[in-house]
Amino acid sequence: MKFFLDSAKVDEISYALEMWNIDGVTTNPRHVNASGKPFMQVIREIADIFRGTDKPVSVEVNPHHDKWQDMVAEAEKLAAISPNFVIKLPATEAGFKAIPVLGEKGIRVNLTLVFSATQALQAMRMGAYFVSPFIGWKESNAEEVRDFIADVTAIRDNFGYSTEIIVSAVRNGRQIADAAVTGADIVTAGFAVYKDAFDHPYTHVGLGKFQHFWDQTPYE
Figure 1 (cartoon, helix red, strand yellow):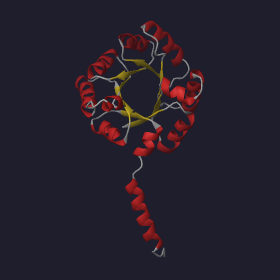
Figure 2: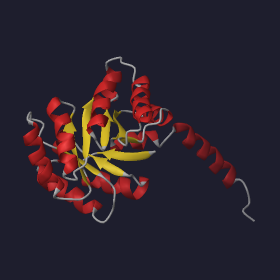
Figure 3: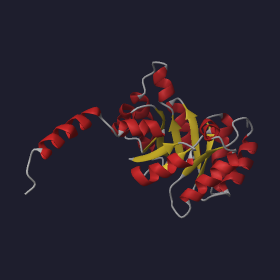
Figure 4: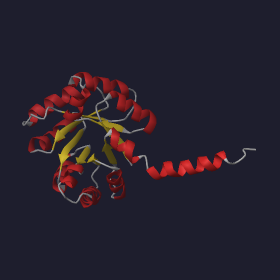
């Protein structure tokens, strides 16, 4: 399984690359806003970090676009900045339509804001490189998410689609594990989510006990 970092903060991305060997990055307008920098400055800085690698960086078009032609035009502009860029489009009629148009131009698409298995299926049918089912939002509204991930994965496998599944809007380590158990390809989560998920209080309890015994034992 691959781990992507859901962030547009350069310091978080650099740390995650060095310490966690993350496999890619996803951004969205909220993350870019949180960086405190202009959109184009942020994505160019991220492009510089990944220059010379094959790790993908998902960059989202203007969410106000409701015509596929406008999505395609901006996607071409963004894709020209870096070969690492994968263009995020929303799971709308215009977004679906833009997928094969961009595919013919060699531009990869990450279909985002996916909340149903049928939306995921349509993204796969249209040739999306990535599809991003959102689970955190659904779970917050008391919807079952493990079955949702399993359905999306089963659809992909049943028909042999090449689309990779990025489980998105992940809130905790349990959801990361759920994504892995149900066969998703990728998880994307925020910096704090990974920090918490990679840690466990019992690890520190056990380490303290071992340190005590180590200190009481001659080395030679």
